[in-house]
Length: 187
Image 1 (tube, one colour):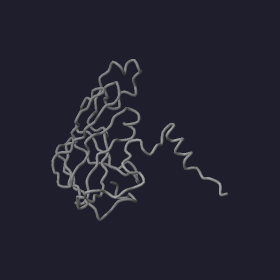
Image 2: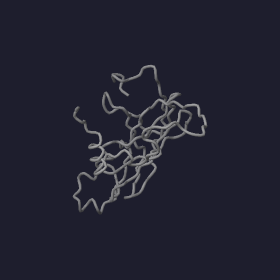
Image 3: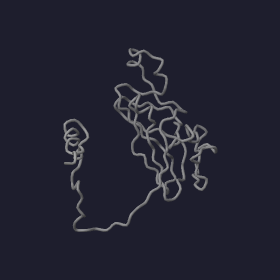
Image 4: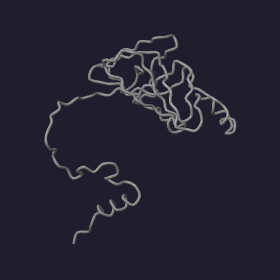
């Protein structure tokens, strides 16, 4: 994070150990970026509709009462279908950090060289994540763990046990929800 960032918390410090000369310290992409970009320390192919673990060759000491969340970079996700998985770094973990990348596209992902190829060439070329590519971002989040108390029943709510899709928000259900909740004139 840049020393001039307006969101820098000077009371909070995170130690990072580079495990290889190929490792790169995380960087903040802009003054108000929530995450720090993480860089690949190796070349790695991510097969179409597959996944790969990419080594960063660094270890992180996340501050107590926090965890590091490895999140996708928005451009890789929206333009190429590249997502991250299993991205939690606990504050007591000291091992090497790796990023699990999923390629949800129908072509193998190979870093940034693809942008100079035609569609026909792209379908035939095998590409890979390159050493030094920004592949994910690390977001530091504060955690709070509650004391657990087992009960026989839970307090009731208006929503109740309604699960996936129960609050509407799409298609016919959204229209019905809107009609049911429109303001009515006072008589």
